[in-house]
Each structure stands twice: as C-alpha cells, then as structure tokens.
Image (cartoon, rainbow, N blue to C red; front, side, top):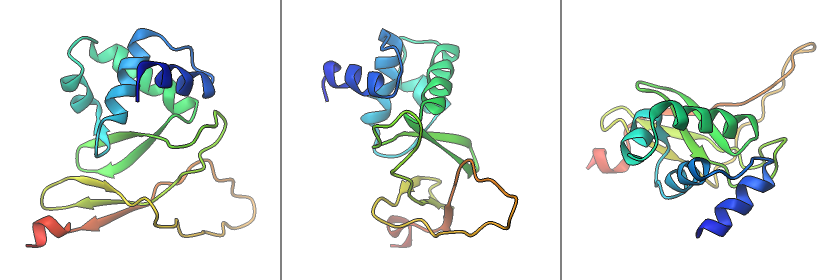
Length: 138
C-alpha cells in the first residue's frame, strides 16, 4: 500500500492524515502479527512513544485498529480491514501461543455468537484462544 492509500484509509475512518499517523498505520499494515506498543515504538524510530500511543488511541476510537487484550505482554494492535469509522465488521478470534508468545489472527474463523442476558449492552468483543501453535508443536 502506498502513502495515498494510507491517507484514504485514515480519511475513511474520520481521521486527519498527519505524517505520524500515516507512519503508524503503515507500520501496523506491514506487520504480520498484532503489535504491542513497545514493538511499534522499536519499529518506528522516528516517532516518540507518546505520539505512537496517541495515534493508536485515536485509531481505536475510530475503529481503525483492533486492540487485543489478554496476552502476557499487554495490549496488541492490528489494523482493521473495515472501512467504517463507527463499527468493526471484521472481528475475528486470535490465538496466543503459550510457548513462543506470538499472537496469530484467525481470519476466516467466525466469532462465536453470545446471547447476553436482558439489560446488558455489548461494546466490544475480544476472543482469545491460548495453546501451542503449529510451529512450536513440531
């Protein structure tokens, strides 16, 4: 994806495309696996940690990233495939390998539907499966 596409992606989500935000979006898009704040900070040497964190917070508010919680090293972030600024339409489960501590997106695997009792209102969903990945099982 080139810079023009990142600008368009940010704009589709209602985000002003600043240079820092484009760099953070590009780093997320080029990652094979969800990234922690520390990993992004290490990959993006040109932007300080607070600016990376502010971009991620804004991206999360506008549904440009999924925040994946429940691993041993804190929250990880991945770019949404959705092009909506008010909801996610590409939710999917994740797999955390307890041996190599890598997190894998399980794209194409449907999220289980949960029927909440009356009075409960869902705001987000985070489905994490933990175990051993195929690479570590060898």
